[in-house]
Picture 1 (cartoon, rainbow, N blue to C red):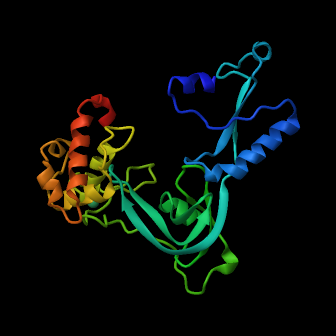
Picture 2 (cartoon, helix red, strand yellow; picture 1 turned 180 degrees about the vertical axis):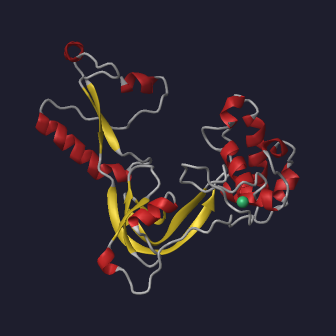
Picture 3 (cartoon, helix red, strand yellow; picture 1 turned 90 degrees about the horizontal axis):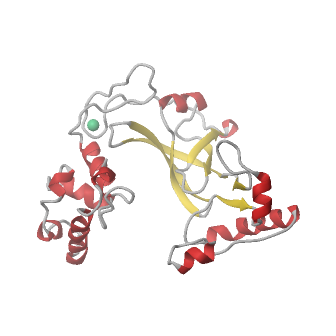
Length: 270
Ligand SMILES: [Zn+2]
């Protein structure tokens, strides 16, 4: 099947394993675990399938999925490090997300310096404090998260964390809906939200604008060059090349990317 797809130019998994016994299966999974961090993409598991059509028919299917194919997930990898600070990030919907600044640590194939703390309730439930030694966890492409605190390593004089109820970007008072755990900045003109919406617009999977990453969007917004998706399309290469540390070639690349994105279906921008 993979070969057949590859013949048509589809990208396929570069390696597959076949086996007859339970031992073969375990050995294959173990080998994948050894080589997976050297692949050019991240993978957190495997799909195990029967390659005999008669046996597949015999296995049948549940209401949701066939019984002859099964996903295997490697357990998330963990590491221990020190939490240096807790900063608040403001997302495109205004959500205030506490993020842990960590002593950089190598886990699951890459160096991790930040981990999500989800929300204030979660931090209080786990009693995570600045200065703590923490266990972090990373699986596949999922954002690393703080799992727990090693309490016996807690330094003296730490303070329980309290989320500031003021948006760190625009100073608006944050609000929280009843029954919700997430505090939000209610100001739609908040620079962080404006940036978040533009970044989201440019993202792969949305309008897929080449070169429209975090750094460029930050500069566009800071200079008032584009504050919504519509204004992106009024930009010229000269506008963009005038920004700090922006090469002419990258500026043109971004403008070309915008032009190309006009061919995308509009629903992708939402
Ligand atoms: Zn704000």
